[in-house]
Amino acid sequence: MNSSISIENIERQGQNHTVIILASGLSQRLGQPKQLLVKNSEPLIRYMIRLALSTNPPVIVVVIPDNHHSIASVITELAVQYPTVQIVVNPKPETGMADSLRLGIETIAAFESISIDRVLIMGVDQVLLDESHLTSLLASKKLVVASRYHNWQGLEKHQSLHKGASDIIGLPLAINYKLLRQWQSALIGDKGLRNLIRGLLADQIGMVDNDQLSYDIDTPEQLAYAKQQGWLDG
Image 1 (cartoon, helix red, strand yellow):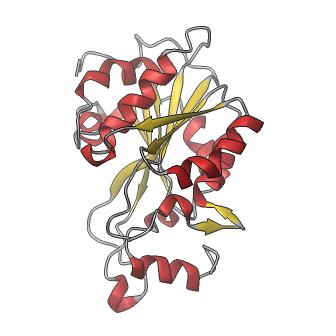
Image 2: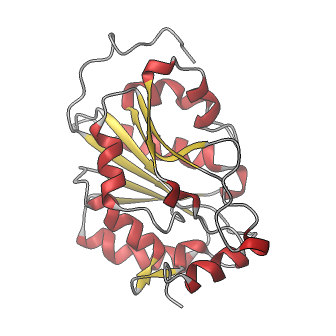
């Protein structure tokens, strides 16, 4: 990482952004593809793509795992309907999220005719994510604007959100495109953006607080609770 990069030597950003949806996880702890969980009568991955579409980007790259035809099939129709949506298959999803992000960056870089200022990076399992939060991330001009929330702990015992001492700084986030390209070669396996972001100066990072993002779906217990609350279809 080149820590000398600063707000002053990055050209002022407009509203030109693209989106990468990281949806290549194998959901091993959950025991079923979280991409195919159902919210508002449609697969969760389609729901997240529609959220991304609401921000009006010229390109949305959706990275999915290889050999999961059921996941590909539920978004192929949407990709046909919206040419904005580009499907990318990660042939080695077990290697970690960073590889999926790198594939997404490479796909965006191929659209040379599009002027890109920022990239909005999303996951697929924050079931209470909404359009207003994405809008807030894109409203700031910081080099990185990340979501800040708490860890969802103790669900099995308390069936509630336990606020730990430390915040989580994570997805979704908006990042300057030039900076993301600069970091691209450092994205290997599980070495993701979090450590790179920590190397920035405090005034280069913006935060949007939203504890609803604490509720992601990684375990059967979390899935059952989300269904009980009506966040996902039963």
